[in-house]
Image (tube, rainbow, N blue to C red):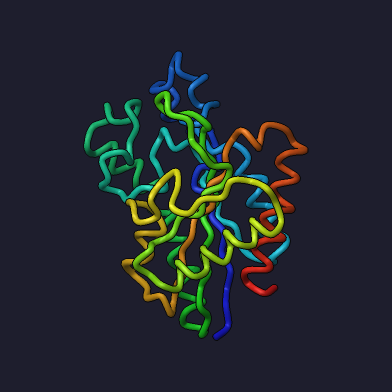
Length: 231
């Protein structure tokens, strides 16, 4: 079966639309932390998209406005800054920012499946080295649904490719479980394994601190993923 590769970066931006900036008065610094966006993912997405000649769908605003890697009704879709909005205002935020992102991805997947492709979707994320006082013991995480055998096999192959090419700590379904609520889990409800394989890569901010480190990670992700997908 022909394969189509799709990359997404849900948390690529820390921007806030002008209409909602008042909600972040005196909280602008938070937008520049891991709570506001995933540092380095925009650059990683660009490099992967170019290397695989594949589309990359970027989130255009901060996850603190609405989290594009959560389903619309999830309790953490809205942050403490935006939960103060009325129900109708939250519906407006979903309609303007959340639905278009998910709809664009769904339309791409639908088009390619109808054309006879299997879609390989890679979500690109990064994580803070310490959360709530707990040190994360990994440099890279590969998230997937362990109940889907093809996703598991692809993720194990990717982990092995990393181990062959670097000395970084690469763990599966860490620091999050790939089955948790998110974009990939939402797509799994719509498509079979034959149609869609979803995976998320998580990179520790500690190894993305400088442009040189980001560039090195770009090369590593491209190289390992090419070996996994036989490009």
